[in-house]
Length: 102
Image 1 (spheres, rainbow, N blue to C red):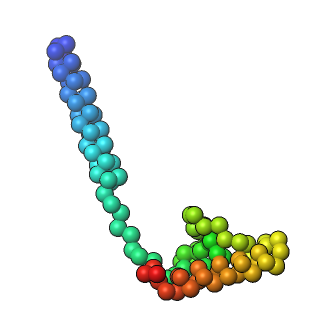
Image 2: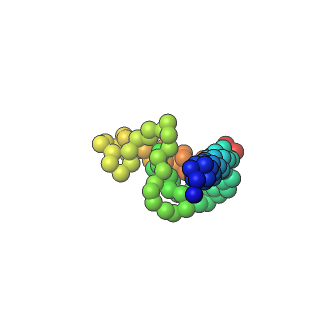
Image 3: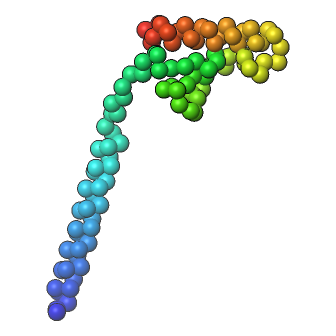
């Protein structure tokens, strides 16, 4: 086999690999940039754990709400903190029952 044919075959194989890599890259970019279609969560599927924590679909792990820091209810250091924690929990529960239009 001549050197020209070997080089041509080698270059052709490299071209195929590069083409396959570019197609894979294009597919990945398409998947990354495509918006995900998420279903809304029914408020009945959300359980309020405390004033800043919820559980979705009755499954662990619990979800901590970003930007919230409610007083503790279970590990409160005093009665005043426990009462404020219970108030925060009731308020979050009311918001969840009302739905997301509040």
